[in-house]
Amino acid sequence: IPNAIIEIWQTDANGIYLHPNDPGTEQRDMNFQFYGEAVTDENGAYGFRTILPGEYEPRPRHIHFKVKLNGEELITSQFYFASDNSRQPDPLIITLTPGEDAAGNTIQTGQRDIILDIEF
Image 1 (tube, rainbow, N blue to C red):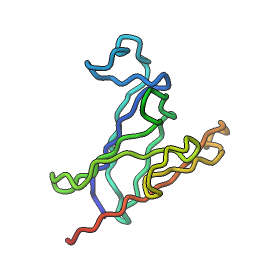
Image 2 (tube, rainbow, N blue to C red):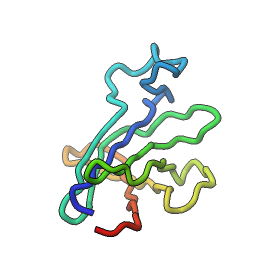
Image 3 (cartoon, helix red, strand yellow):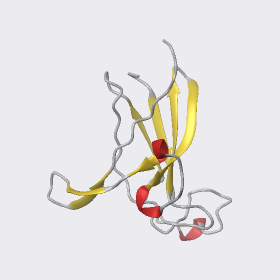
């Protein structure tokens, strides 16, 4: 779907959210953004560069996402990581693989399509 807005939000590496109800908010990573937004290209592709979210009980690590099109919310859900054995449905699991960025830094990459049943 071209021109859809994909939002993500997550914890920092310590498992702390930027949220007034998170008891650790004052100890959060002040250099982390916690939120991102991307617009899909003409092929529906999107991308983010972020950190691996920290763990916090009782939830497994995850990245929240929301898809909006023309101001309408189409879906809100979470992506989980295969390495955490979270027992989530396969369409919500991201498998990370080692890689390198353009500067030669070691990174992990993952890919997940968001499939929606909508008509234009």
